[in-house]
Length: 121
Picture 1 (cartoon, rainbow, N blue to C red):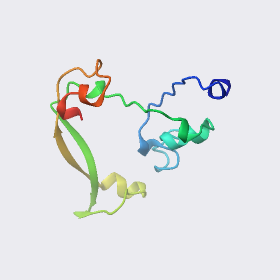
Picture 2: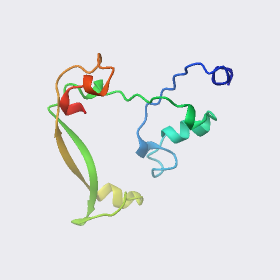
Picture 3: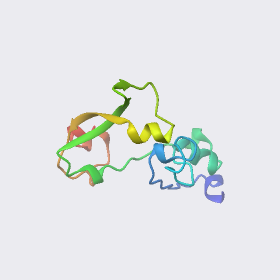
Picture 4: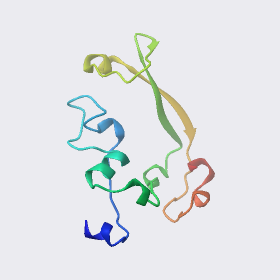
């Protein structure tokens, strides 16, 4: 890529979660592409040493009272040690969530970690 060779800044947008990645999920619950930073690096043939920063977007979560983060799955009352790749098992599995307090403040103006509301950090 000419911009990389000229050491110009480039922006890459990704919009899907890890568990939709074609290599990390179970068909048909996938997107047709890779969704991780590593996949972006290899797909665009970027040198990881040249990546100065990555930016995450949080504004979709700004209005939630609580943020539920999936931390495990249970099947037949037993916590699984891994993501249930079997679709029948996944359909019956219970997601175990850890709830974090929401921040209910805009994050759109934050341009540093400490510019974020405390709960968003």
